[in-house]
Image 1 (cartoon, rainbow, N blue to C red):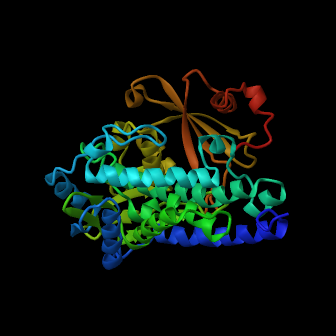
Image 2 (image 1 turned 90 degrees about the vertical axis):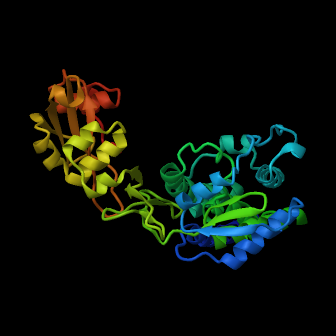
Image 3 (image 1 turned 30 degrees about the vertical axis):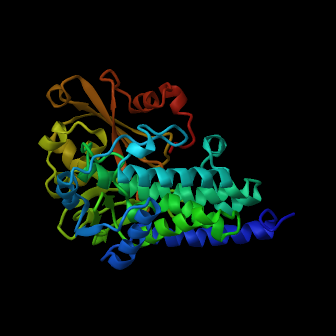
Amino acid sequence: MSPATSPRGGADRIALARSLSAEWRAHGLATGPADRADAEAAVTALYRLIDEPAPEFTWVPSPTAALSLVLDDHVTFPPLRLRGTELHPQPRKLSLAARLASLVHETRDRLDARIGRGVTALSWRQPLTMEPEAALAAGVPLRSVVSSLVHDALRTTLHDCVRAPVRSEFLPTTPGLDGTTWYGQHDAHWIAHYDVYARTGLEVYDRRDTDLLRLLGRLARATGWWWPGRGRCVMAERPVEIHTEPLPGALAGERRLHRDDGPAVRFADDSGVHALHGTHVPAWVINAPTVERIHAERNVEVRRSAIERIGWGAYIEQARLGHVATAPDPGNSGSALHLYDVPRELWGRPARLLLVVNGSVEPDGTQRRYGLSVPPYFDDPVAAAGWTYGLSGEHYARLVRRT
């Protein structure tokens, strides 16, 4: 049995992978000034790989501050290929940014082939439902455990919970920017995956791929987002603040954005992103939530967050919801189900709202309440709760516990 697959070797690698994952997570959530010298040196080296001279560098305080500069430079690019498909147009017609992206995509394809992380390999791997060490002892393949511990956990934190809302806030469907933004520290989830495979001894890469991976790792450690163009590269500083909390049920250090007294992500120019318990919300949800704004909001998750912000008791009173009935929740011992009638003018249709307590405990030890829209014909809270699960009230009453 080889060291990489023996119980001792596997456990040692899991411990190292956990430590390296935490290290990369810290880089992805880092705040404060970028290491401009190292970031510029790494970008210059990347330009050199595609036979381009070093650009001039323009530093800005945030992604939103970069927009006018990038668009003024007419940095528009043809669509990039999907992984594993052909390039269109032909490489000789591609812009500088597209050629750079092509270089990285081709390298990632080779690295994926080395570590067995193609589409087929990912299709059968399930998310971890136990601690990584326990999963390894239970027979889950070491590589699958490492991939979940590093790539999946970091993607959840850095891509899904941070990068996605920041991009949605600052670069929503901006023409000319699709496929051209490089995310620096928020690319750490996929860079870390390849890096950890190498540093735990699970894989050895070709020299050319190792060199490129090292350059991308330097950028993830040194800077925020950046936009390469011919003759000029626009570089954004990292945020000055990032506020997070542990993701409930996290097994590998996953975190989500959360701050209830200001922006969860703030840049030096005071542009920022607001989030409550991982939900990206407009600033009014934090600063001035009202029943009128709540009812005008189309996004159900934003509405829920705003209601939680003012409190369900205050919302029910201010919205003049009529109490219908209360019953113990058979799926969540010790909690109650509250059924309310919703005035037609609020939602534009007859409806009732079922107020329930989440079966899962939040990081601070509390259990959140949330409201569910149910048909107006329900008078029994238990039957209404069963309907939300596709069950009859009788079947729901037999549940031991829901989540």
